[in-house]
Length: 453
Ligand SMILES: [Zn+2]
Image 1 (cartoon, rainbow, N blue to C red):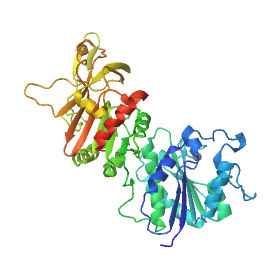
Image 2: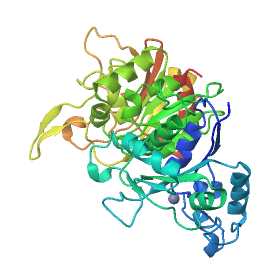
Image 3: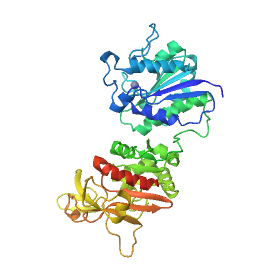
Image 4: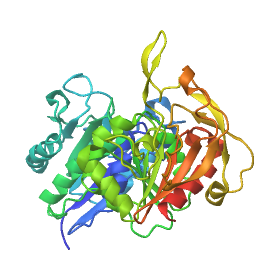
C-alpha cells in the first residue's frame, strides 16, 4: 500500500542499548501501508564495546552522530560508517526519520542532559505529532520530573538534523533516560512513542496495541528476562547464556510488559537474582497471575536465587509453581536479636552435585561443581506424609552460614529442582551458575529444557 517511508535508526551511540533493542522489536510490527525501514544497530562496533564513541575512529570522527552533513555545508558525511549510513538513508528518500537514543539523566532534573525528551526538527508534521507521542509515553510516568518534554532542534551534524535539512524529512530524536531505569522500561518507552507516531501516520493499527512481537519461526527458544524492580543483577550473564543457544532470542521484560500479556510472545521467562518479595510486589496480583497462566499453558519458568524464592510455595506472594518451601523463618540469635534465616552473608562459592535426573537435563558433569551462592533458597525436607511435586536436579555438597541455627541445614539439600506446572516446566536454581562462564553451557541446557526446545 502506498504511504509514507519512515526510516527508524537505533544504536547510533553504542552505550545506548535501548534504542537498538526497541528498533529490533519494532521491526516485527505488522505495517498497514507505506514503508518502515529499520536500521536497528547503526553502530555495531560501538554497541559491541558499549561505548558512546566509535572504537578505533579518529578522535574528531569518533562521535557518529556528529558526522552527518552539517548545516550550510556540503552534502557529505565524515568517516566510513556515517558516509555509508547517509548514502543508504538518502537512497530511501524518507518522509520521516526517527533516531532512538538515550540520555544519562532526566532533562527536567539535569537540564544539560537530553534524557527523556523528544528532539524534534520542527517540521509542520513533526510538531503536530510530538504532543500525542509525549502524552502517550508520559501516561504511565508518575514522577512529573521524569516525564518527557519537547526539545529541539537536533544538534548540528546529527543524522536527524541532516535528514531534515538535506532530505526534507520530518525528523525526531527520541531520548530515554538510562539512569536508575531498567532496559525493559526504556525500550518500552521507545516503542510507545514510535507506536503513537505510526498509528498517527496510518502505518499501524491502533488496536490491538502493538507491544512486544517476537519473530514466530525461530528454531531456538524466545526468552524473556525480567529486569524490573527487585532484580539485583545477573541479566548480562543470562543473556550471554541464552546467546549460546542457536537461533535463540533474549528480550528484557518489565512488570508492565508481563501485566500486558507479553509472555505470550515467549517460550521461557527467567526471573534473576535480587529480592523475590520485591519481584513479586512489582509484578502485582495481575502480573503474578500472568506468570502462572503462562507456565500452566506450556511456558517455561527459570528462577535463579530470588527467582527460586518467587516460585516457592511458602509465602503469600510466591507463585507456588511447586511445593518447595524455603528455610527462612525468624530465629532468636543470642546477642543479635531476631534474625531471618534466609540471610547467610556475602556471596561465596559452594559446591553442588548433579543427581541422575539433573544429568539427563544438564549433561554428564561428574563430581562436585563449584558455584557462586548468594543467599538463595535452602529447601528443607517436607513434613511427614508430604510428597514433593518437584524433582531434585542437584544437591548442595557444602554450605555457608552466618548464624548458629543455619549450621548443617544446607549441605545435602536441593540446589536445583525441576517441576511441572500445568503444561509448563519449572527450573528453580538456588545458586548463580550464570555468574561463572564455564557453567553457562550447562545452564543453557537447563534453559532449553525449561523452554521445551
Ligand atoms: Zn545518543
